[in-house]
Length: 360
Ligand SMILES: *Cc1c(COP(=O)(O)O)cnc(C)c1O
Image (cartoon, rainbow, N blue to C red):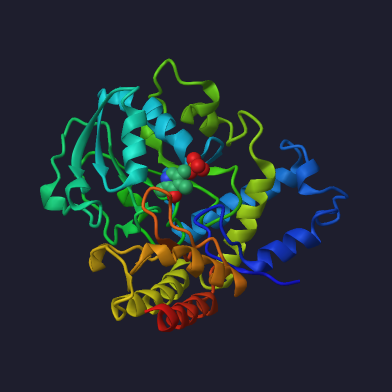
């Protein structure tokens, strides 16, 4: 068996130990005689898997008791509608900070459900930096302030938590959740699709403060009403059971590695290898302001985009895949989530050096 270094932005590489454990337990989960896929979500086996996953996520992120953890479906794009459906009815408006493609999508969707204001935007600078907090125009009457904590396409990440006063902060953390410790109490709501940093696609984690539950617009489908889900332990409808199981194995794995502080050290070390090389090369470039660079998604361009195809082909031949940049920005993108090893990043940089020597 050969495994590639998979730089996919998502669904993304998973820890080998997790995949091995899932393979081991595939036919018979811990003496139950069933695969997790075959279990009733109401049975004691799955209820224990679900409870353990929630407990481990609470422990890893230090989630306070006055927050619910929901395992939902619909992905982060689904949450772009589900969040305003549940939250915007409190005052009728919300503030959005626009830092790239994903936050642009979020505000566009929100406009269907209420008044969504642009509080700040990095568009004038082509989304290469996060607008400083001092420039945000926040409405104290907004139901919430929405940010995307890591723009997966542009490679721009918040390395600070905005203070939004009494207005709840909502964050799309799809591509940097579990990458470092955060203070959950500074957020009203956090949502994240699992398929970047914590599992397979199919499950969306929503961490929501109790007082924000119970304000859904009357049009909200019951399966997407946080109150219905919270009152039913995320089992109002059948949850994505297998995806929750794998996410649970990822949580156990991250715990065994030392938790989120260890992830942060690992992620900083990996990103430094790549950014240091990019900054010392005149052949490759990354446009993002150093203070706002993502530790998870590193977009870069070659000096001449006519070389892109040769670069990708050569990478593939060396077992490095999914490096093509998003179609909206072109160039390359290396996604280096928790499960990417430092060896993978070093192999990429060695290849980039070799390619630069040949074509620079
Ligand atoms: C991947 C991603 C999404 C989209 O997730 P879906 O599962 O396709 O809904 C949204 N926001 C961010 C920040 C992402 O990285």
